[in-house]
Image (cartoon, rainbow, N blue to C red; front, side, top):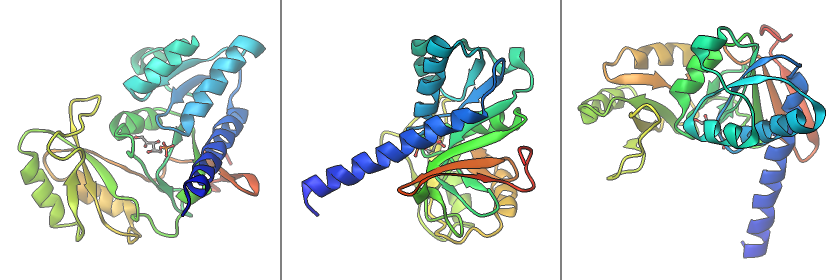
Length: 242
Ligand code: 5RP
């Protein structure tokens, strides 16, 4: 593939992320308490929220799901509060690495899955922003991120390997990636075979040393998906926004 073609593909994907990120702002209403997700797609949502606050008098408060989102939101002048102060949030908007037809997700490509799940579980609705590469038949082609404690992480990884037939690798290798919580991330290669994400999540959470699993089941209410054909909003028929 030529460099020019590769650059075009990268810029196409970036344009889709931007479209999805901005379109999701249609779910936002004045006065809302919002969870602000993490990643390169929802980044566009946060930037658009900042723009609407500055130019259109939108008034919201946010709870960031990572230190990087905190920095971005602060730079845009979005007022931030803690979950403890906010209580239940009206909505969280976040990215995903994969979603299936049941609106189950793999998250954690950016390493923020634990805070993302805490915020999502504290919200009355969750909207995912994604481009159409993230839509899958069965979860698992994207390696499942699992946050683990650094203490004896090799033992935790060995126990996960008893469940995961593919590779279980520590993110960052010899210089491990460290999460905002001081944890490590294990990327687990299940392959596109996760047909019962709820059971798998419970099994993995039973392993001592596992902090959180990047499977989000029964949490996502809608996906704002961008493709070359435009924006499609998929609403979970059993979700809270239907
Ligand atoms: C971070 C996440 C991200 O939301 C997910 O990785 C998607 O990111 P991007 O929009 O950059 O593809 O879960 O922990």
